[in-house]
Length: 150
Image (cartoon, helix red, strand yellow):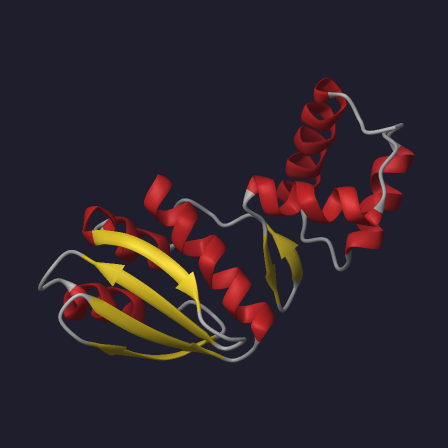
């Protein structure tokens, strides 16, 4: 039986609290930590919850992006120029921008220092972003979405 909305809200709040204390090495470690505080969870529900709350995978484990992160500030400054982000294969993102803004957005992304990003190529309103892996690609999408919502 799927969890109720209230259970999801409680579980996601607990995951946020746990990640604010320290990074979680694995999703399984989060499942165990949730169990210790009386919240039932599966790896798949934790995976969905992590995605929903905007957690990212870093070399230290799963973490919440910090709002003071310089990279987030770089991209947040140009958020109004972004039009869309689309994965293209396992290691490439296509970022659409306002007309004439691609180079400015690509420069902000290059300066962000976000892990997993190999480099950018900018045209007039389109940017190709190469990532180290499919996982890095997913993390980058999450970071862009988080930075542009701030």
